[in-house]
Amino acid sequence: MLNIDPALATVHTVGAVTKISFVSGHVAGALTSHTDDITRWCASLAPTANVRTGAVTTDIAALLQSFGFAQARELVLMERDLEGFNTSIAIQDWAVSSWRCHFAARIDARTFPVGWDMTRSEITHALRATTDSGISFVTRGRQRIGYALVGASMDHAYLQRIAVLPTAQGLGFGALLAESCLQWAMERGAAKMFVNTESDNQPALSLYQRFGFEQCGERLFVMEKAATNQ
Ligand SMILES: CC(C)(COP(=O)(O)OP(=O)(O)OC[C@H]1O[C@@H](n2cnc3c(N)ncnc32)[C@H](O)[C@@H]1OP(=O)(O)O)[C@@H](O)C(=O)NCCC(=O)NCCS
Image 1 (tube, helix red, strand yellow):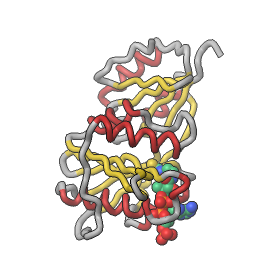
Image 2: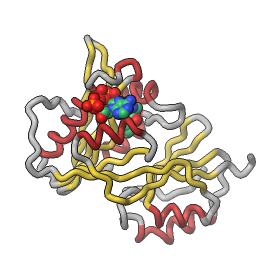
Image 3: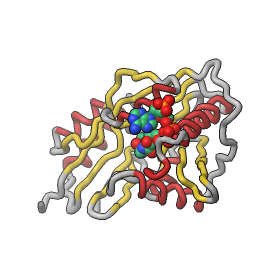
Image 4: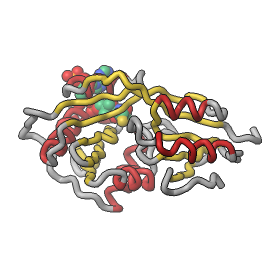
């Protein structure tokens, strides 16, 4: 329906929203060489469902805006230098499997607002976006009540997602997951870890700040275009 080159983006339809994830769209400069492809795609786009992008940089957001996309969310990019980081309390199990993606998606669906959660296929796609990746869980009793998604390519690591079920928030599980993500990145030899989150998500901003992440000054945007028949 969207007629987009799979080398440029992946498409996931969730309810009334079609979500597109540009390849490394949130990495500054990564999409610059694809500006013509995006322009061509936008020019031919007549969506029959609402279309939402993943995080994109300011230049790509401006391009999309000129084709009728509007800003849906503003995100801040944060980074943390890993030199000297070490902890002994980190979770060690970062195995990736289809079942673990399924469990992660179930937690996500109960933690984020409808339409803003990551489906199993989006989680699978996120795990494939980097050369190395992992999922870990925190449990209460036998129940998985939170998870984290990480990735790394060369010496850059990415904290892709942390989610703790609303009924288990404020009890230290997010901190354990964040610390474990840093340790995972450290053990893979990454020099820096990056994370992005909504500019008004105070719990997440505080969590990342507590673990030494600092805002890089770069803003990212989630862009949306309404269906043309609305
Ligand atoms: C962000 C989130 C993962 C934190 O998990 P949590 O288990 O509640 O966090 P913890 O209890 O371990 O608290 C760790 C730190 O997070 C911050 N924090 C947690 N809840 C907070 C709140 N309501 N307000 C402000 N800061 C908060 C604090 O810095 C806290 O450290 P402190 O206890 O020393 O003050 C959780 O709120 C969540 O899943 N939110 C929804 C999903 C989300 O937004 N994920 C992040 C974006 S990808």
